[in-house]
Length: 85
Image (cartoon, rainbow, N blue to C red):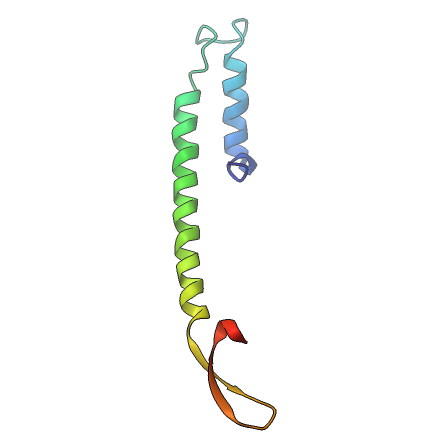
């Protein structure tokens, strides 16, 4: 959620939503009309970011479990996983 609040567009719409809560300056009778669309946009962004992080996690696991050749101090070659280096 904190990552979504770093985006300038989201901050702008949060400020507009807060201003809508005041009857004096609101054209929506004091109701935050921007709240439902803002929630949808933030949730969609959070889901997209979460999916991208999950895909990155899977790719990291795949790379960390791949085999490579390591040479020890005696000059012998061994196959080890990247995560063990």
